[in-house]
Image (cartoon, rainbow, N blue to C red; front, side, top):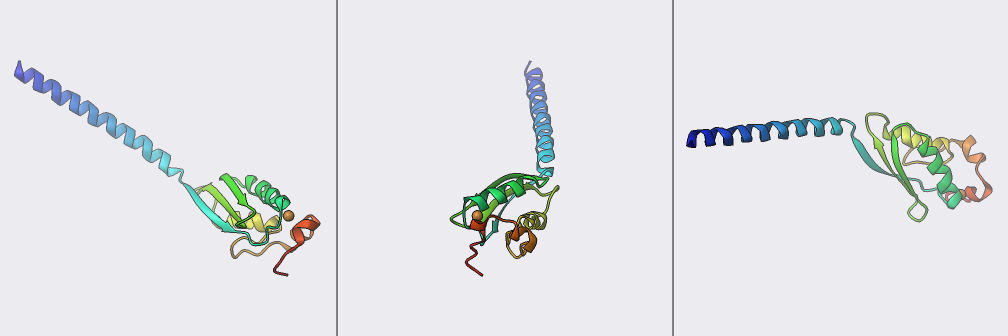
Amino acid sequence: MKRIFSLFIMATFALTTLSAQTKQNADSKVSNTKVEMTVIQVPTIVCGSCVSTITKALKKVNGVKTTKVDLEKKTATVSFVSTKVTLSKIEKAIANAGYDANNTKRDPAAYEKLDACCKKDAKE
Ligand SMILES: [Cu+2]
């Protein structure tokens, strides 16, 4: 009787280990699509219109998950799937919308098209 009982314990243990392993495999599949968070410096943000222009530009980028453009801090916080898009591509999207992003310089033509209120660039 005692032997049957210990067999039962062993079987239960084996099953538990097995299901734990299966769960681990599922978890590692999730981490293959790695989501990263980055804060991009966008020093030429001046108003709410800038915020919505940049937000729209970022949302068009494939692989970008969430965006938060901060008018006060002049930053864009972006979470993105690192297998789908790179930081430099995200910076480029902001630059193409007419704004400097980290060390990526804005596209001058896009800047010209911005609303007048968005061109009060303190650095110029
Ligand atoms: Cu603006």
